[in-house]
Length: 365
Image 1: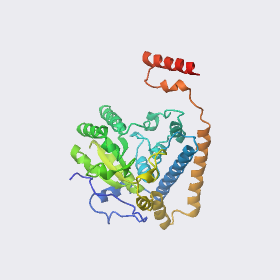
Image 2: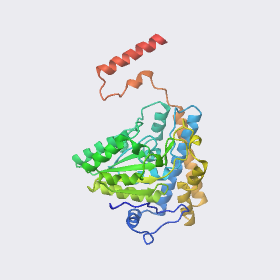
Image 3: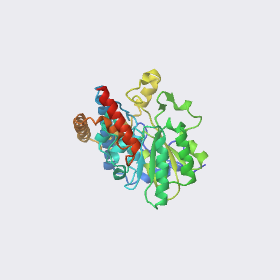
Image 4: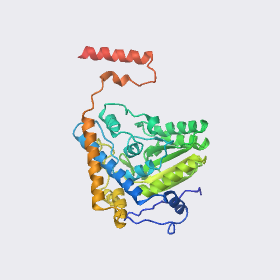
């Protein structure tokens, strides 16, 4: 049995009670130490982060329904997994997202307008990955794990001090790219955390139809440790990710984290989950809401007052309103900009294709 493998790490129960180091057993007690410094104010800050990204997510859905975004991939239900892991990252760390990590983008200081511009079709993303320690979104499922592995191998060769984290879903775990990344990262002891948000559904297929074993157990076959965490528990996710990043930074090689969570909304706004997902399952997971869990805990400790919670809600509304205004003001890009940034330096092939497109478009107008 690898160190760090446990059935489920949970530090806040679904009804908002805190487990303690004394009540924890085995590896779970070890993770308590990684959040020993977290204060009540820090927890309120995590609640604020989750409330803001949920409000921004709602705005994304609304804008798409109003025809202002081409598509939107909602994170609702996965706020704790993203904020907990995102706030564990250090300034020298690098994150490789898929296309749903809006909460991690928030933690890394990416302007939400850049994310919305991507889904509006106004840009290809627009943020500087090196400045934020956050790569551009990867639409090709699972491809970011290979990008992360190569980057992590480069960190080792450059004698860097940071670690790398790669986000992917349970559906992506079935992709060859992900399994190839596991193999390379293990053999080369890459300082990399594979962070799987198991939200139970790969578009319309449940995880039980993808694998006979849980995601976290796959790491055993590749020779590196893994842990399964309650992904709706922001404190446990913070602790486990801090532990995993510490492993990576100190030369212990890769770690696989499986965060058990749930995708409350459709896979994207082009999806209709009522065609494949049972209503009672959705109701069960709604009762495990990550914001409600932390809110209940803080209320019981008299840390979260009505005034403080109202302030968080007002701030979230203000951030969303500002984002809506800026998003609607985004100009449409030139039609031939699809040829920009194909390669670092434009070559003759790209130039020729751009010219051919321009000629064709002119002939059709």
